[in-house]
Image 1 (cartoon, rainbow, N blue to C red):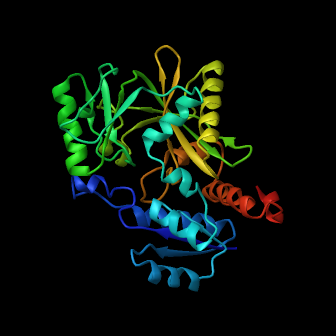
Image 2: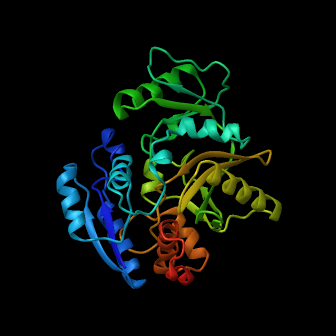
Image 3: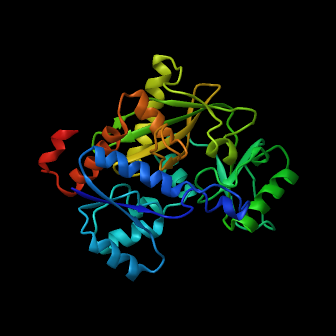
Amino acid sequence: MKVCIIWRKFRNVELQKRINDNVYDDAYDEALQHAKALKKAGHEVVLVEWKADIVSFYKELMKEEPDIVFNASSKEEVAFLELAGIPFVGSGLDLVSTCKATRKKILSYHKIPTPSFKVINKTEEIDIQGLRFPLFIKPLRGRGSAGISDENIVESFGALKKVVSKIIKIIRQPALVEEYISGRELTVGLIGNEDPVVLPVVEIKYNGCKTNNFLHKMNDNEIIECPAKLSKFERNLVQKTAMRAYKVLGARDYGRIDMILSEEGVPYVLELNTYAGLTMPEGKAHIGYMGYMARTAGFSAAEFLNRILFSALRRYKPDNKNSRAI
């Protein structure tokens, strides 16, 4: 099978570069690790760099005659692939283009716990009526913990305004302000569609900071526990909540649900990651949380990515004979 891996410079750090230009870009390292794994799984693999010149990119991609595309990592890439009718791994434009606030509204509609929130578009018009301090602030369409530092947890209106201003003026996005939930930070990966496989739960503990900020995460400074030390009841509740969130949001093939297990035992869903990191603890790339989960589940990198790949292939060809390889 011919798999084309799209890679894009600064894919994980492009927003953070608006704050600090001196950040390491591991986009190619990540794509290369995926390519090696999929080759080990028996596929023919080619890396193709994303270009803003769509016509040029289309010609280069079509020259490779791919059966499927892996690692699409932006709304623009997904829109292009859907428009061109090229099979690809991952969620569709309907979900990818949906901002964090809209996703939270969908979760709330389905009675899945998520922190109360407001969206701030202008620093001159900050309305947090109905929210209680402390609050947590992040970009509305952020990724990779971009723009997140310990100061994003705020206890006063003055501190709130400072962080909101940074997000709006420097990152150039609206600010999502939500009630800060004190508890354990967990994340749950899933693979599949109709009947997704739930991977072992990861707990992220902080190493000298208050939250999983950009530098803490991208430098692999977290204290990772996988599987997380949960009671059977807690584990079932967390995994069930992750499964419900994955399905009601319409995720495809794979994804990761981030949540806080509150001190009262309530799993609050923070967000769904459609571009969840899949790199395992090998090579130069930043380690993905789903990579930790896959290792704990006993998968090699080849087995792990192959499961995700065939989840996508079954969507396009439900009678695919190779589906038995999963």
